[in-house]
Length: 401
Ligand code: ADP
Image (cartoon, rainbow, N blue to C red; front, side):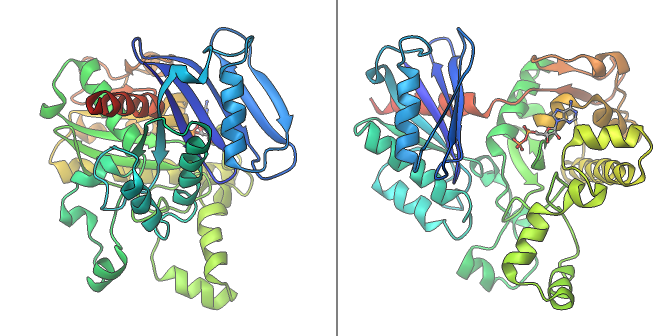
């Protein structure tokens, strides 16, 4: 069975095609700048070099058609015809409290995703465009949606409620949902496999730190708390997002600077975090370089990032009353030995001890970086959200047959 995984954004569409008999990715790629002139399609087949094509792709239906053309292309394609694709899986950011697990797309599911547009205005409308674009190109293919929020649906009320008037929850569904759930789920399972213990017996803190960043307390294989909130703005300091701040700052700054709702939203989401503090970059590689060269703003950005990360790890250990493993994943977590080192070196109160040599190794494989004496296992696990989406799609479509 072959499954096409799609992650549709408002002006982009990422894809990956899997052969599920072996769980191997046959090709991946992305379309960027949809709706603009000179859209770009980058197709990366696993058997040969990637190809880049520039053309005008005005909407998602054309983007999906171009992707299917590439997948079936005699030279760079990986399948002979579209009929070889048995199902399509989509990443959907916001499932609200409607979707607690992945589901096969039908009219009711589409209405549900649409009813959540208010909660995820930048994401859910784009995902619906992706679903409709697949329908237009492959009218009868089964589609599955996998939600970033679903893994966090096990959080208890005490973790997901905000201490504000309850009417806001009742009327507008204001609560913590959490994001990156597919990644937290995947890396916690791989952590359990890697250390050879059942996930049901473990307390794990999963650190998904990329451009966006979130931590999850995973107890017995279930999310019991996570740092992103109703939106992906809460929690850790990120590339361009502020993370936690005193909520009173928002009306204060709006008043003092005469900012609109959109302007303040944009400030907190796009002009804050590492970028704001360093004054130069949201990229952890450049921040680290600046810090190593003694540049004061980059140094402060680096220190704030690590300090906040460590405080969150500590709070999740307290939330679970213990921890067996801490796992790092995503762009920063998988690649930055220096972030892992600085984060772990002040977790000695937990008995955390990492091996500097193991920490330096670069690999695509899950690996332990803690010493045999460490009281807590510390791991690096490359995330694979696409594979999780492909697995759920395969499982649901096979069960439905
Ligand atoms: P996204 O949240 O967009 O999916 P990724 O998980 O791909 O992001 O992470 C992207 C980030 O990873 C980049 O912005 C960069 O800061 C960081 N990154 C990648 N490689 C390294 C590295 N070697 N050292 C430090 N940071 C890195």
